[in-house]
Figure 1 (tube, rainbow, N blue to C red):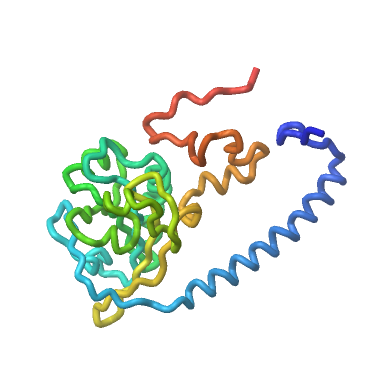
Figure 2: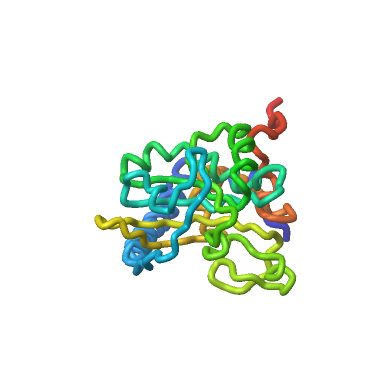
Length: 246
């Protein structure tokens, strides 16, 4: 028996709908409590002192990891997939940065600095950043170990050997660059610590559009796609949206 599509639902009375909604609300509230508990556990994670000195290329010259804090005690980094020689940045990472760029002013108000970091040379980052119109701090880790140490760039040898270290496990990966989000803290003495990193589906936290799509009848509507996020485009490359309105 075929299951009903999201747009062929069971039609009920308002009273029946309200009963169903209240039942779902109980599950939503339980999910919220579980998420809050997970968040508290995340904040209790131990920290790792950063002993290696990472120096990035930025529009204002050489900057260290500590400089990226911009006077704040917390730093969030998007590991943006843009490798040396690429014509443009990853469309999925661009989808992420479309959302993250709008949060920067609010993060600053809560003692959090933001920076995007890519493996490509700065000269290859800046034209794409200008094209996309993002007003964010974006630096290059080219020539450093940063991307490799945080397992978001892989050498030709690593790729040739098969599975690579990504998302805390050895797994096949289709590209030499990978997405992620890393968080750092700096204490009163200026010592920098790594507190958290998330990869794979963990970066969904940055994608508000997906959270909103989860509310509508068709949901993310990706079941028949060859891969997740197949539909995503750079925001300047979407075709006019089709309409079903008559």
